[in-house]
Image 1 (spheres, rainbow, N blue to C red):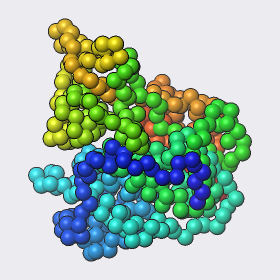
Image 2: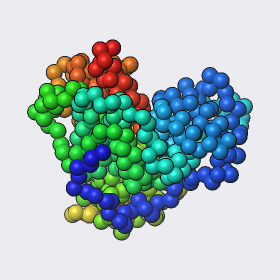
Image 3: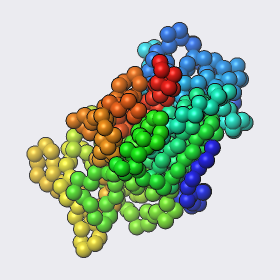
Image 4: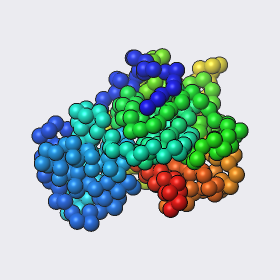
Length: 435
């Protein structure tokens, strides 16, 4: 394992460290009790709902018999990012949402918390748990662009197959959104970096951070490496014309909370979050939990039309977040360099109004970075700017280039990115065997 980076440790006094853990780690007794609620379905719907296909009944049964290490191994066999997925997956709409108990009016099994219990405790006892018997070195070299979940999953599986992997990351820290963009009350940056370290220990993997790949460099990678995996995620926040003093992009602001100790909320009394997706909810909850007295989400449609998950909005309300529906942002209102409000138009056709505020966080989506992918001959983008791949192999129109994660699906979950990385790694190894 090699990590080439200017950043060696996370700075202290980051705001994220002040946020509570919203789903604390189970105790041994709590985990065994919850695991014994499971009826271990055959053809379990929870397994079908997991994008990586983790054998959920088996890992839960092992917890029930106090076999924590065996449980974690079952999880990692299908998902090398099983620890972070346990923390950040919206299990309410995936595995737990498919639990048969939902049909019987009973609380579903707490699959995410059980998965965290197994992976966190097992890795704490044995940091090398992810390691398996690596296959002999093949001499094959693969480049991964981006060090997010998709690339990390691909790199880990490729290393286990005996290949050499070099990951190029433009930021100073690897991990992608797990490190920089996941709500801190779900996963802190230092926990994300711990998972990265475990994956990098699987074999011949080198990470070069602070390295941005341009079109020319991308084409050179295709010449110098036996395969290339594109896992570049999404681009900068869209601001809807609200740029200026007092306005921040949502994902940029989450990154500052997680990594920049100079970030401060001093003087912020009223914060408005523009958007109705999960990122908007995350930012709103973070601001409320960090003590901003008045936090409201401003959404152009109704709550029923929000793309954010219902259970997340329920949690936001418990944390003190308000929702202002049927308001479309028109302009930020400033007195000189001071933000004083957000002018909005009522989408029910009832005129305009100004909502007082001293901070605006815009969570209206992110731009695409996929023009880089188009630098490779044969790689196509769809009308939404997403990289086009074969669903079974994640291979693009270029024989040596594969892609996965948000640059392919437009922005889904960490678990979807992990599955893309796994599929691509399998396909790359198969191509080397001539399969």
